[in-house]
Length: 268
Ligand code: ARG
Image (cartoon, rainbow, N blue to C red; front, side):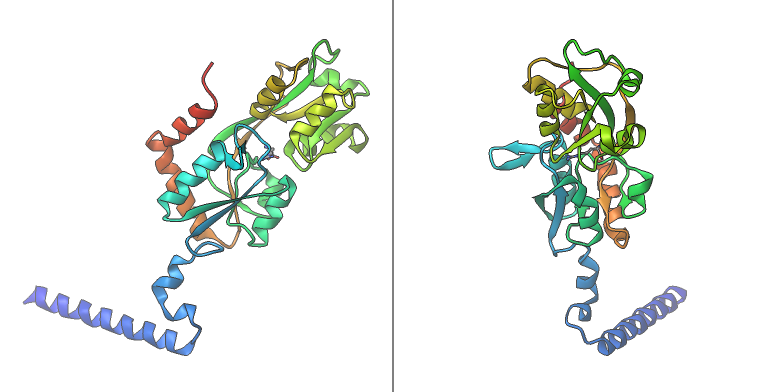
């Protein structure tokens, strides 16, 4: 008898709620909000898609293999998209347009070996971190520069990728006059090879691949800074942020993340 009453009460409640919802959607007669569940599902810029902005000149995180963008970030984002039932679309743009593009809701996420910084946090939210980055110093073999203090003390010029933390930190320390900004990290490294700059500051993993691709360069053993990488999401989109964090957590726990990293950064 008691059970029956409970059931009747809850049924009545459900009925009342349904009525209330119907009332709501009746008032706001916009086509997409008339179906409450469809409105709930739309948590990306384009329904069914996860649009990722990156700058695909940053191996092993994002780079071209033929005309396809591959790398650690591309694969992690793809694994996340699959978990969320979305199709990943990658857009290759200038690195320093990523945060503003996510802010403007042109892209769902920025995923680009992006360092979490207090400054960027003013504009976007960051997911939980999925990798550690190190700002490394590249010089020519035989360079008189052996560490950051030496670099700073001289009148040396440093090449960086525009808008990266390497750029921001070093411009702060040395002043704009001693910093040359390039669109791509590889261009900064080329300038080092050509003698246009005396050192390059860039994330360690791309540094390794740029040094491997050019003769006569080396990475100093003393790193410049250690940082965390995360994806950025529009501040209004807590739903997506939470879904990505949930997916990332699962990918960390089930070993997928480690496997992706190991595929691109073989343990020496
Ligand atoms: N970690 C650095 C930063 O966040 C550099 C990232 C550059 N990424 C890229 N895909 N080009 O500023």
